[in-house]
Image (cartoon, rainbow, N blue to C red; front, side):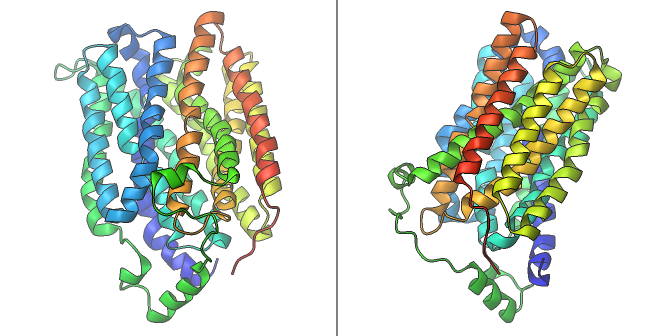
Length: 419
């Protein structure tokens, strides 16, 4: 990576990782809360799947308008507002009296978080050319495994605070893990610059080099900054949306079900947090090496397809695992595949998205794709309740990832140009 882009990455990415770590933890910590909350609120596994998935309906409806709002008001103001909003909603979840309000708050949490991830994807296009985005996105996406590596054992320990100060363990989980979003949201305004031309830590020569490397011609398909224009995008946007849908089925299949699957394989609460963190620890190494390989070779198609197929194989191993160690190995392979695919996916899919609608098109891909986060938990929960086994649900996720591999291969250009 050129010194200029290393300098930019070191300035921006560590703070963005911290923000995404908090965001991802707030959306998946219900996987641990469910171990005791479901009993207290009379939530069965099918209803838990609905509650986990309804988050992504909020994501779907508000993601495109949120990304367009980011363009209008600036990254730091909008991301600050989003983080404060979802922190308040997350804390409020601790005090729900029953399933109905719980599901409503999950929808509101998804609505508030909708603009963050696609907003960061868009934000990085202001600062980095396509040739280095895969490696930088890999650093950013490390927030996902880090949130599980840190969050899993911490969440398990927080559950042990049961009845402390009159609150149950799962209530403390939402209070303690929702509060950082509010505090960090306030810091965003001061630590996250909107655009390169506004910072003092880049020299005029560096700003000129960056502007040259980022220059793209307007897209012939551009229809202006509008919701109608966003959803009347060229067909390739919807192809990438489907491929991302398959990937998100896998990501949230991991996030929402690893603790309960491992608990069903006999791992107790004392060791469950650490066991659930192991697949993500393996994923950090795999995703960084894979994305660097993709950037170094300037190749996307094979790297992306192989990552999808590795994830599919991992879910199949976990589905048929006879014991906890084999299940952990399967989930580890699945985590490596999914998290290795994510930075390469965004590098490959955004190469062709240019012009005024790039913000909306990124949001369309992410909003439609994240519906996989709705259907995945719902389907796995229903299959689990019907068959009394996780085999059918995990195998169905593996099949979707294999289909996603074919779709990504068909869409992806094998080589990428750039400085």
